[in-house]
Length: 261
Image 1: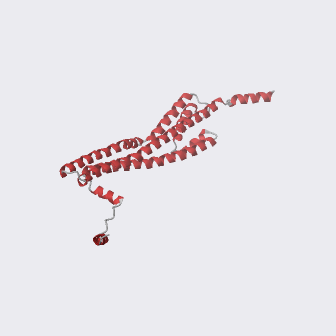
Image 2: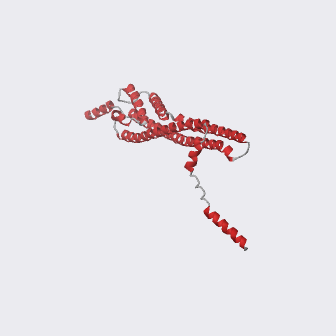
Image 3: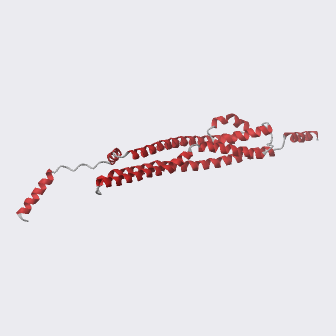
């Protein structure tokens, strides 16, 4: 190697050692905050609408989770009490303790209809009326459990389209910046592309939890519906067993005949 090459290499090493250190790359959070700082008014409106939708959807998710959890727990307790009781009147006096359960509404409707038919004792006179009462009670209970779930479905469906609107407006902003700069540079298109990416991600972040929760709650509603149908049949069967029992008067007559013979 020639002396001139040695000198050039030495100068290069000295210059590299004295050079200022490269700036540390920004973290993901700081980059996101910087992008949010430079977004336009339309993207701000879109993000505000998505934020409101997200807050409302999470409020519904938390409220419904608590409601369904209490309904399941009280249904298990009510079924245990119902199967241990010897008379319907015993359950009627304590049914208010299990009120979060949808089964209580069915029991009350069937029991009230049975009392109107028989006065509280004896076989039922109209089994069809009891079945209709149970179906009406099951529908009312499901309506209570379904309350506000349609909002979750609406948010899950609408949030991606709201984010898509912000995406389109961000791309339009990027093309406007490209036209104003007159050259295809990153500085010209970066703000618009940032808006498009942020609003797209925000729409998905809002929609995905709402969609998952709606599907889970819908599955739970089907389980509640099956449980209410099973309980209705169980209670109607118990009332039919009452109808098949022999009345006490013929038994007393048979006993009296045996004593005379």
